[in-house]
Image 1 (cartoon, rainbow, N blue to C red):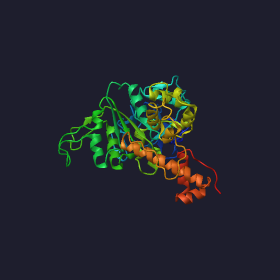
Image 2: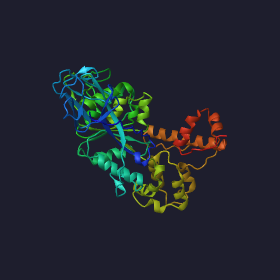
Image 3: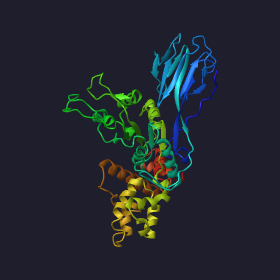
Image 4: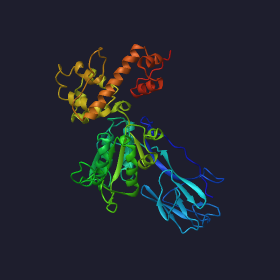
Length: 452
C-alpha cells in the first residue's frame, strides 16, 4: 500500500507573517477505516486506486476491484471515474460512475472509506524586483513578495482568496491579477456582498427572469453572467448570507448557473475566474459556523494575505508620490513627514489616499498646510469634546467604516491614558471582556503589558 502522512493545516489570519502571506491547497485522500486509518495519499493530476500492484494507491481488500477507480484533476475540480468495479464507487453514500469530489466528501471504494481532504500549505516565494505591479505600488519586502506571488498565480484560472484589512488594496490586487491573466481582454466585474440587502443579493449575483418575484418587472443579468470570459471579484465574501453560499458553491463546482425563475433546462455556462476578498480570517469564520467550510475550501485554492500600511511604512514616500501624481513627499516639511510616518493608518491606503487628496492642493500654502491641517487625519491628541474627523467624500460604507475605526482607536488611546496602561482596569472601565480588549488593542497597534 502507498504510504504517506497527514500534513498539518496552516491557519492564516489577517496578520500572517511574511512567510505565510501565500498559501495553496494540497489535496489528499485520507483513509478513515481499517488498520491504516489516517494514512494520506496526495492527489496530483490523476490517482489510480485498486487492488492491483501497479495502482498509485493499492488497497488490498476483498471488496476492492483490481482497477477500481481513477481520480482526475480538471482545473480546480476533482472527478472520480469508476472503472467497472464489482462492488461500486460511492460518494457520500450515492453510487456513481462519474462524480465530483467536494471538500470533506466520503469516498467509498468497496468497503474501504477515504475522506477527500484539502489542506493548506504555506509557500516561500522570493521577492520580485521593481516597485510597481499593475495597480499596486511598494518597494518594501512584503509588497515585493506580494508582486512575486501575484505573478505566479495570475496566469492560472484558479479561484483566489484575498485577506486583509479594509483599505489595504484587495481591490487593486484583484484588478492586477485580472490584467496579468489570460482573461485580461474580458470584463472585470466587482460585486460587494456587504452593499446589497440580503433579499436582493441572489438576484444581483445570478440574475432573474421577468416575473421571478414581486417587483421583477424585467429580466436582469447578474454578475456571474456579466463576468463571462473575464473575472468576477466578490468583495466582503464573509458577508454572503449562509443560505446563499450553497448555491454559489454549486455554480463553481458545476460551472453553470440559472437566473432566478429560469427553467431547469436553461442553465448558463460559468466561464469566469472568481476572486474573493475578506477583511476577516475566513477560516475562523468557518470554525464559528458563520461561513461554510466546503465553500471556503472551494474559494481558497490560493490564499494571499495583503500587508497593512502600518506594516510597510517605508512605502509611504513612494505611495504619496504615486497617489499625488508628482513629488509631493519632497514638498512636505520634516514635521509633516514625521506625522505621516508616526500615524498608525487604521484606514490603510484608502485613508492615505484621502489625506493626499486634501494635502496635495495646499502643500505650498503655509497657512493651510500647517500642523493643524494635518491633525485632521494624522491623529494627534484631541481635547475631550472635539469631534472625530469625518470625510464625506466616497461611498457611505467606506466613510462609515473609517469613522468607526477612528472612534475605536481614539477611545482605546484615551482609555489606556486614563488607566495608565492598566489592562485589567481598562477592561472594567470599558465594560469589555479582557480578551476582547486585547484583540482591539492588537488591531490598532496599542498592545500594552501592565496587568496590575
